[in-house]
Structures are given as structure tokens and as C-alpha cells.
Image (tube, rainbow, N blue to C red):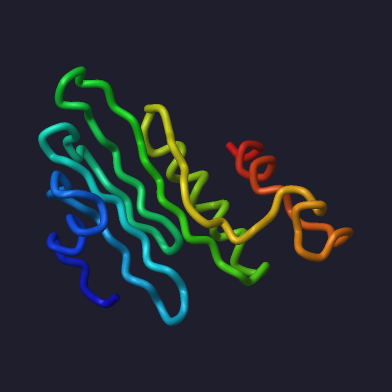
Length: 131
């Protein structure tokens, strides 16, 4: 989908969704979307990267803040290091709790891979081990 509209957001996410941040798909890759109900969540800041959309949100009721990062990782091993660098930068950008969701296109354990026995990088260990 080239252009995301509020009408589409409401059709997918419900009628209360009235604000969003989107990164369109490039080629065959998936696009990334973060939507919200602005009566409940205020967007304080955002960062749109090569592989992710990160939004610092503030709850209208409690004033508590947290970060939502939506990810669509690359299929190619050569580009994955850039994904980890981008995630590390997102983690340190704001001093708030952080929720990361999406498709990393990696597996943590070789048993989880569709070709058992193949050695694959552990995304959580790699991400959490970076400062």
C-alpha cells in the first residue's frame, strides 16, 4: 500500500484510532505502522529508521511515558547489523520503558529454524548485549 489514510487505519485498528506514523514498504518488504487514539496517547517524539518506527508516547491520564518500536527486519544477513545498530540507538534515545514488536526475520535458536542445525544469530542476546 503506497499511501496510508486515516480511513484505512480506522478500518484495520478500530474507529478510535485517529493518529498514526507509517513507513511505506520498499519493494517486497513490509511497511510499518503505529496507530493510536490521541484521546488516550500523546505522541511526544518519533524516529523513523530504515527498519523501524519508534514513537515516544505519553498517557493522557497518568502522564506516564513509554516507547513503542515496530520493526520489519531485513532478510539478508549483511543488513542485520544495521538493524541491531538502529535498535540500540532507539533504546538509548529516550529514558522510558520500551516495547519492541514486529518481524525481525531472524530466529534465536537453531531448533526454531526451518532447517534445524543451522547456526543463526540470537537477536535478543545481540540486542541486549549492546550499549
